[in-house]
Image (cartoon, rainbow, N blue to C red):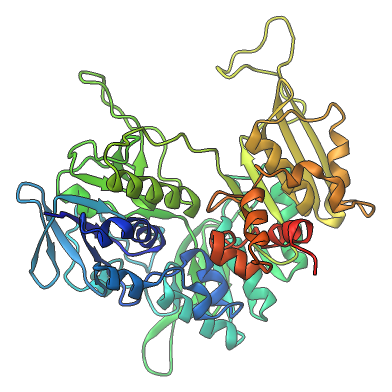
Length: 532
């Protein structure tokens, strides 16, 4: 009898899990049912911002073939909510009241946009809120956002932003993280009047140091985005529209500033959807707590992947309780790797090796003309007193870590490299895409930097020749971080006749995540694609 697997969530990570499980479904070993709240099939959420400003079409967001899955025997229920998990009976309850039995349950419920505390906006407590039967109210429940206020998590949100961009309206973005900066820069490029409001000194403060953030802010202003820093939002002012409804008019800040606009776009981070798991008695923290085999701490028949999965070692019995370290990664690459690994485990239960340790992620800002990449801890400054990893200063004065920094704010360029015993442990790079690619390669490999750090700047110099960077074309060098595709895999696909970026994406999945590697894929093709 086939094992009954129920997957809750049909986003990009859930869709990847389905694809990888198809061989077992076709073989009759697994009976797979997928429940997704959105009425449409799975799509690439990473590119929703591109769709929201008209830079890509709806078809470009497609990442899976649901008909192939259905033909293989997968039951896909879209536009359907799960309101409860009964772990004793091993069933999930659907919005219409139907009971769906499972032998193993996989939660890929993803994350929702954080709604900040603002006067005029109702902020729900979701930790113990029972999911509603109507899937369209999965995030809004009984407290929808006011008119003229939106977040950017799904296609409906994107349609709202797209209408504002096409109408040339003024868009106020609250929050200067990666998504906030990407949408602001893209909207400005599309012709909308855009401003970004944030309470800190610099944008992307979680990933960038002060110098890189200041360089990014200056580059954004040059691109037409108004950057309003040191502004803590407290409330919203409304106006009465022609139809009699209340709509956003201005953002009110703690210092009295009123920042007017037509659309307020909330970009204040995301939070894992954990209420379904919490109500079922599963352990949750920043996400659904799972061990390194993606198995729930509380129930060996329940698993979690993607933005809802908080992967951390299960505490030893009798150990003191505390807040678990870490959080869900929030990036699509780690989520896809989790889906791949868990599907492989389900296909072959004899292979129970723990989930491989994931490499530290590289954060990239995707915006035309504004290139940003960062990884590792870049908080150290060149003149900081050296400390060891435990935070203790070295008594003998022998430094094991150092910082190299170069800045050209006038031209929007900035680089910082943090090393320990010569090994690159963190970097940030603004406005220098080729240098960023080289540093990404060295960071991935734990490579040692040259004694003269300045030679790395030549990659963005006028006399740089791509062929001279031989290491960048090493066969084991990663090109697509979202899917873990190497130069060698792309070269092999090119030899088989895949000579365009689109063909490489179909053959290897490279470039189908955030899309930030498409330029690198093109360079690899220039190097390895057959001539003639």
